[in-house]
Length: 541
Image (spheres, rainbow, N blue to C red):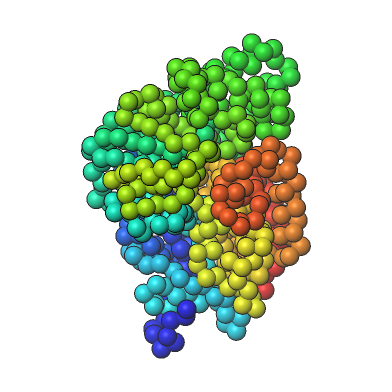
């Protein structure tokens, strides 16, 4: 609903939604151009993902040396991470430190949710309204709202009846939660659920994990970093900056192993063992690309991981059947890093419910009722049930383009973008971490978010230099990008698997691989070509 028309209007050159990794950098770049720009953030502080996700055990799984901003060498060297994979509190402090160093907070309006954004065809500008009723008039709208920022909160009937406490991992209370000695349910065993389970297993009285989809895992190796370690990474700043932009997934490792069919089984095993021992996502993103295309290769790699998991579960038949995937291949889902996750299930105070056999039917005042009629009593229910990934952050805002078209309604039919950065029919609307770009799932986020921010900024600068005020992808270019995206995706096994990558976790969501899987280096090359040729896929007027 639009705010009353007599309220004062804030007039801007550009409005940025979000103050996470992308929003902070986008604010910096547009402000650097001399634009009158303001960022709007729903939370009370900066950080995006690292502001909201403060659940027990939250930490990122990109190494600290490459989960970085690359526009300021001195800034890179000045902040020393404590370990290879820092936890949420440290990451939130880092992003606050960046914002303070760049003096960004003065241009961020916190505790402000954008409810609607309508393109005004008479003025060729965007009219925005906030939850508080403020109106904003901006020439450019840049949505930096994250790919996993629309949590699925209302998942089960009867949630409001529960007499205990329901906690959503992506909306964890800032003051924390005391779980000591309590009966705790954890719903969900994706990357987030795994971090929660392994972290609270020794704190709770009793924990019951509701398992539906088992996950392949990789054990995290997380050494501490000394000043000398960080000085060494600092010396490699320019090398790493260039490297991450060209690899398949925006990390400093890539698919460098010899082709699968040139190696003996023993040589393949040695490669897998080496990368397993590295304790990073390198087993997934730098071993054998053939596992994404060839079902026979996928099965060998998957069985390697299953064998590792069986050993850690002490070959317990029931646990192995429950927790080890057999109906999809390693790497076709998001692969979590973990530390003691599987061992949690060997503890006497940890129990499981197989939701493939007895799904959750509803939440009742006492706890959780499953389809067999059993009521499981709890004091606390932790919901790690995922997100409306990629598209959800945008469709939860009432975004309307030319002719009053609704993005939510259009994306209910088919999710489309032009390189994940603009959408035909929505002039001067830019986005990062959106569908059909690597940032929707398959990239070290700082790598691709910064590249998208730079592309958006350069595109706006080019248009302004040409005396143009409106930028919109052509229908032909968007059609071509969607076709290229689908052709690339359909060559892989990923599209044959149900996961949030395909939108399968949200009822009624159109099925399409949310993330471009053609590789980060290839994506950046195509983005660079558009810019070098004067943005031929984008109409400017």
